[in-house]
Amino acid sequence: IPVLSNGRFGEGDKNIGLVIVLNDVTEIKKLEKMRSEFAANVSHELRTPLTSIKGFVETLREGALEDKETADKFLEIIELETERLSRLINDILTLSEIEGLKGDIKLAPEKIKDIVEEVIYMLKNQAKEKNITVTYVIEPIDLVMKTNKDRIKQMLLNLVENGIKYTGIGGHVDIKVYAEGKNVTFSVKDDGIGIPKEHIPRLFERFYRVDKSRSRKLGGTGLGLAIVKHIVNSFNGTITVNSEVGKGTEFIINLPRTRDYEN
Ligand code: ADP
Image (cartoon, rainbow, N blue to C red; front, side):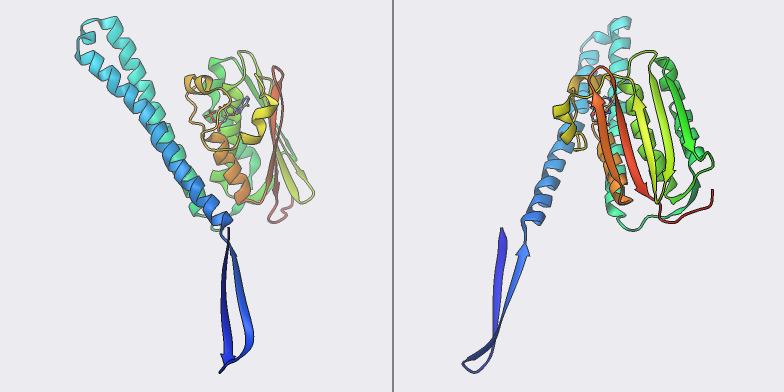
């Protein structure tokens, strides 16, 4: 909805000019709507594990505590839901931090190999549990990029973690990073369950999941890809997804190098 305001300048009765200010508030309205939807979603997402925790605590109090096996099972669920709450809060904070610091990111020359190896190390147990092989190729291997280490790490962490989560036992997740002209391309590819085409356009929305119950079972928050997208945007980069159901998924990110470093 455009807002129209005008002012007239004149000497006496004579109009000598007309100023028309056109402000497009559509974008502002859209942002406001997104913000209030996000708040509603956050409350819902926080309430779900809380309701579950409360329910199990009540059942324990009402007698389930007497039966050790049941009690153990309930306590395990309570623990899992608590962990989910804490992940949710972390992801929400990460998102708002990235949004809040727009244009104010600390950049330094970073060796990409170190970041990739840290990410693989952080996820080694998750990969081991499913016997998933995580590999990496970096060209050139000593690639240095002027960037923000925390963000690149978070971006890769979310993508590789998804690769592991949505890939079956014995699968593969391959990370590739290569410098190409003024860009650095990151690719994270898995041979997992894939994503149906119709879901791809909405994948980066906050709390959007292809399969809600699967994401829940795997401990997902639905914010991982929204965070990735925000990070990519903060570097003026692009992200694309290639996926085939039953074959696997590849996320490709292109980031401009803010400055060239000799490799
Ligand atoms: P979640 O916490 O649910 O994993 P994300 O924002 O990280 O949330 O991802 C959104 C959804 O995209 C996931 O719920 C999942 O359905 C789908 N998805 C993300 N990465 C992959 C992947 N590598 N393979 C298949 N599906 C994926």
